[in-house]
Picture 1 (tube, rainbow, N blue to C red):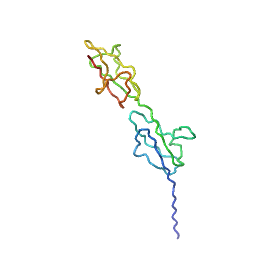
Picture 2: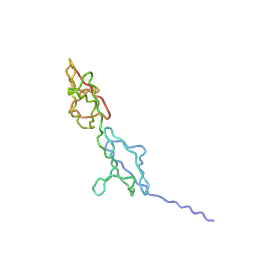
Picture 3: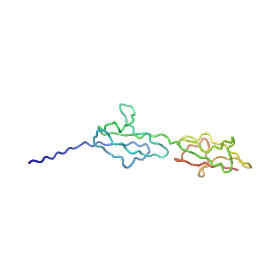
Picture 4: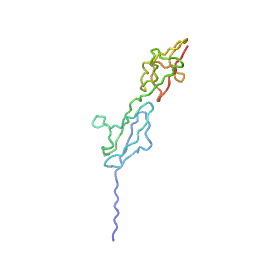
Length: 157
């Protein structure tokens, strides 16, 4: 009786991640062995942004990497694409009401862009002096830096 041991050595391909300021998921491997299809990666995170997929360049074009169908055939670089997050801003009128009577409760803003039009409240016996968040004056031209839902509070004189 003869015993034969067969050892197969698979090539191991390196994966480089371009994260543009994001943080990769710890579970994402630094290398892959060649497989018919790649295993889906975990999503990275970046403050103020929503992950929009892993991309690679093929012949000068940026192409979305489809883990369900793409084959890992060599070392590769995957680039995380991001879109600015949509953030809910709520309004605390601090006893006032919206001047047009709508009493806007909230609005959607985009991280990294201006707040845009903000409500102008009124309050009997007081003059509206603006909006405030955590000690910072917020105007229509203020760039959104908060990464999550937050409340602007009316300032009265």
